[in-house]
Image 1 (tube, rainbow, N blue to C red):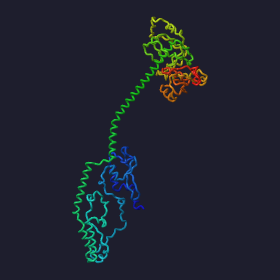
Image 2 (image 1 turned 135 degrees about the vertical axis):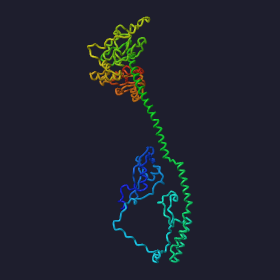
Image 3 (image 1 turned 60 degrees about the vertical axis):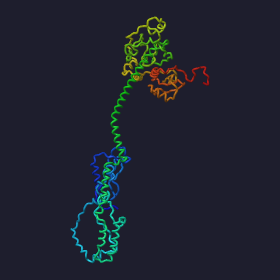
Image 4 (image 1 turned 180 degrees about the horizontal axis):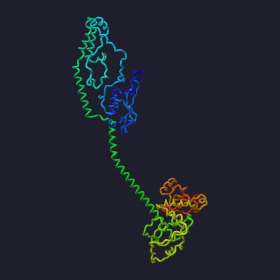
Length: 537
């Protein structure tokens, strides 16, 4: 049951007793970063500690609690392990009773007690006599820190007769006191202090305890010298110091690493920009080369004025004579229709190509040989080898792409609005104009393609693999997988792709740029290509 006097104490009284009060003052005046030695908190850096307590009633005591891991420490352990203090510097402990307020007596002043009668009266002597021997009382100087061997005085046990059996001098004193008490019972009543005199004579004096006191003092000085010269380093302190040095090294190297990362990012960005420009230049050069090769073919296809898909044979990729392609004297990369193809060794009437002539990467409709005016493929082939080659026209005067009275085509608007000059932006602008103006996409050739608005494209050179792998790497080649509805491998090296109608032109343009693939004519994949093939095959 709690003592009712504890109600007089204020809240947090356990921080007012010693040594909690002294340790709290040391913690508040501390300016060095503190570390929690708990295994749960190792590696989290410096920590702060809050005031806490434990226990109930008079057993309640103060504790420190780590703000990070919540581990509690008794104030003595906190002072030694965390504040790195010496336990010998702590004051004497006190309890809650020392905090009780002093109550002044409310009644009248107490009267002085009468003086005791003299000790020589026979009645008092008779009253103090007892059949038990008197208790042994040793009168000596209070023990010091040297005599107690670092044990606080308050924690030392009181010496009683049952505890002195091991000491020879004290045992002799006890036996002599017993004999004297026996003798005093039979002796005269006027000699009651003979036992006390015998005990006083038997107890060793303070001079006899000097050698042991000096030995303790020398041992204490020797221990202090050793601790000052070589302080023990525990595992927790070692890892804390190691972590501090590691953080210093990382902080020093972080600046150099950040600088290298920034330079790496700038270098990668520069490489990506240069690669993008290179791909654009390569695509435009492929478009020009493909156009020039198709112009000089022996069997041109009819013009496609309705911007529909033109079927062509594999002979369109045949090589042409190197003297038919001349390097232009000025840059050919431009967004103007007149400058897309640079300097040509002949004049071409671009008005016959209608809307789909200058689409980047698209297969244009080609007119017949006589429609090229003064230049004829047949006449150039049949001419004698000794005939001089026609002189290149350095500044060709091409006719206007359309009469001044007619409206500009979608292609011309897309080229004029293409600010970056990229094929992607051209395709977006062209598709937007076609949708807003109600332009219909070219339908397929089969009834099912016309019904669903899709196209089936057969590509040779696409090796058989899983559809997911094919889609992944087609996406890496800038193909739009969302526009490719289906991929089916009909042979070990041939695939059938189903493409939406609004993506067929860009798809064919991209495939024609990649010369490793070959576009095949449409056929029924359910029927064998070889009519003499056995049914088992």
